[in-house]
Image (cartoon, rainbow, N blue to C red; front, side):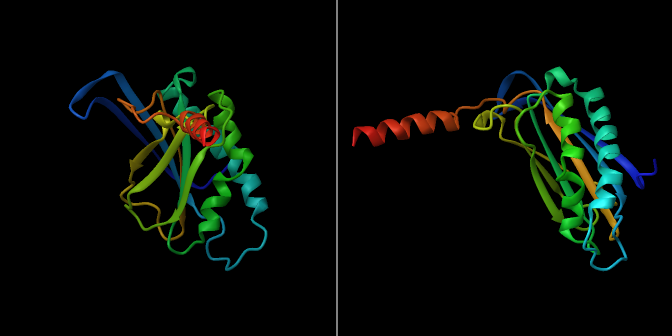
Amino acid sequence: MDLGVRKICTFIEEVFVEGGKKADQPISMVVVAAVLKNPWAGQGFVENLRPEILRLAPGLGAEMTKRLVALLSADKVEAYGKAASVGVNGEIEHASALIHTLRFGNMFRTAVNGTTYLSFTNTRNGPGALLSLPMTHKSETGKRSHFLTANFQVPDAPGADEVLIAIGACDGGRAHPRIGDRFQDMAEMEAEGQAR
């Protein structure tokens, strides 16, 4: 199947020290990004994006997931997310179309035994823009220790008629989390409300 992919880029970050203090264990973050021709480029406003979504999203999801779990084994993934950026000749909806479908996201979610939705960004950028890929815990949405962001850039992408899509994962939370989680806030606020 021709997915129109020009290149696939992989980014790996390993954190050993944060805030001047050594991490209990190294924390690994991996991003896999695919750069492909925008399938709607040059067509003007396209009302029905679905045919190209159905053609491209499953294959992209499968290939990108395979590459990511080869670098960070599925059983070690604790947090995950996705991102998309369209070149300046495209609509943000074009970037969104390829990642906001279960035919793309479920490949990744299932592979790593995730149960929550994948955090995301979708933007329009020129080549070399710094892109952010947000992540949350794969099964506990209120676990703030796993509110993470992978930053990456591809010097020559997205081109004006291209789309860059990415998935990312991390094998832990931030090195020294100490702000509590959403559930703690909820319990405290409920107790405060009952005390009044």
